[in-house]
Image (tube, rainbow, N blue to C red; front, top):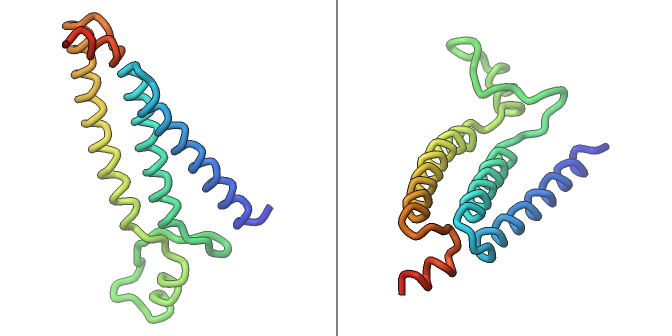
Length: 130
């Protein structure tokens, strides 16, 4: 299988995953299901950011670290040709931490809503609230 075909399969599955998670966020009445769909959505977006930073190189891409200091010109040429971009990786790490904090906050809010109203159904909560 060619790398382009595999990349297209991964991109198609990510688009389907985003669509299903957005459906779960907007169409499901349960707050728990909304939180799960939001988590799946954020994980899919993080995977998209990692794939954007991927670079296909033969035989393998190299990590973005220069080995010799000061770098020789041939090391710099190899680095530019084969190194992956570290910025998407750093952004994904930050997004994972922020996503975890937001998810924990939403779980806390959902448990408090369940404690007060006795349900996590958004429609029933709207009726109970008036």
